[in-house]
Image (cartoon, rainbow, N blue to C red; front, side, top):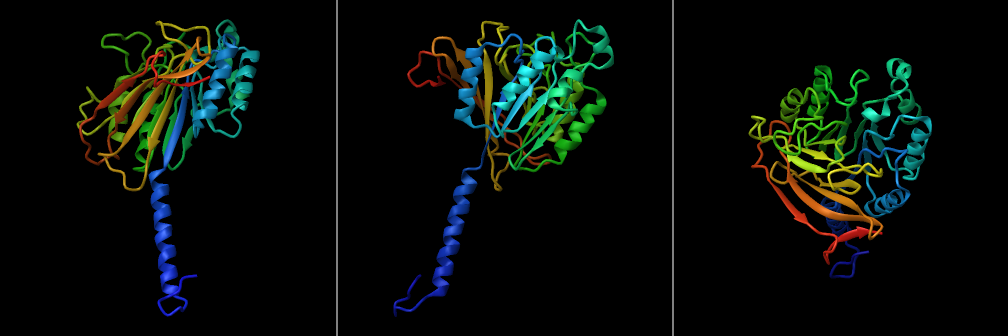
Length: 333
């Protein structure tokens, strides 16, 4: 109870004090609005390594993601026991929501009849009928796409209908949301001229999604983690968007001299955001045999465009690296 100078109850002062405290609490809450997305790809159950699985679960306990995205190739050969292992792994995350899409390895390869008639039967039995799930919260909109095709061996494809459906969904996002599309095959090469295994229809997708407001396109397939800009040759002067690729999360099928690798994506948002303040942090975590845990080996702070129709400053990326022997490295063991 607040008293005035005469020792009397001052209701107005108490109300004003309560209002001030409420505003301070709202300011603190607004400043702490952070959303965390864990990006896994190419887990390839059937070739998983248990020490890596255990280390990844410890990383999850540390990062506490709001959403886990699995961008395809959950299994090695789309066999029942491999899908069961993927389901058991997902169950270890408790109530954490998942967004999962199939990869080319999640379609039967040697079962020709199954590939022709029910290519997604195994995936649907474990992860449900929706092959193109959508997740939405105050801080992010994540749209999954099925880019696999039963008539293609490993290449992916995005159709004109898929491109337009995703664009319209992006256009309905709020200014506070991180806007993410998930494919399996990559939408952009890791270096200029490297065109193998890229998503068919990617040029049409990029040209439509950038003006619709996409921020990130997550993918896998190559087992090579990298981040590259999508806006460099887009012709959209205010657009800022990035392709974010993950390595293989758990399997023995590591390539390119890169260990098992996952991405932790952090995005801070509030009601006062504009094109000059929208940034996302992408942290690459690699598994260390020596430490028996995942270590933060690279961080990239990516500048994003504004909501469709807003004006953005020029895009930029700043990177910081920490080698496994660095004193200031981050790790989970």
